[in-house]
Length: 96
Image (cartoon, rainbow, N blue to C red):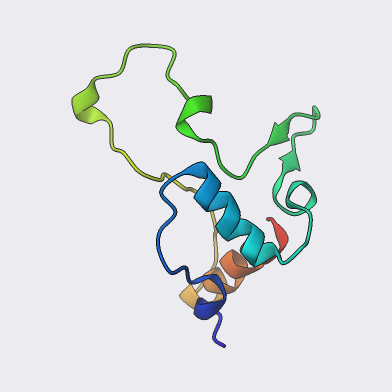
């Protein structure tokens, strides 16, 4: 199995429940909260995914400028693509 195969899905999750099921499959019994939920110095939980219900804008949004689907972001800095890939896979496995 290659590194890429470890996280390959049969289909892209279309909702939060499907995403959570896919994540649970990757975690293989490890606790979601301990692996993927981080805390700020002030003790606030940082979830690995914020579904639209939790991220509704406070101000009105122009519907023509909104993209739909998943918006997943993680910053990785590395000196080469292979080092970056290693860091990303480590985060996926260990909740970086």
